[in-house]
Image (cartoon, rainbow, N blue to C red):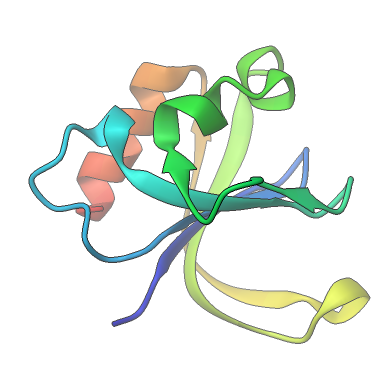
Length: 104
């Protein structure tokens, strides 16, 4: 199954939404992330969406331009996602509305 991804453009952080989260509370979704700017990701295989949204670069720097994509080509400087939709989110509630809109 294709993984849904959100790219927080200004901070260059990607959240990956693998399958298997249906029926869970959205904030408890099991996700992975990659901070492309700092070159770090979560220490465990997956963590809750709530823990990712508590990362200071996300929590303290709203609004964010968030771009949804499923596929990309290239790595590093050649990273080139095929964006499907873009939205400016002003807080957690906006982000949760965007996820609902995307049916994630």
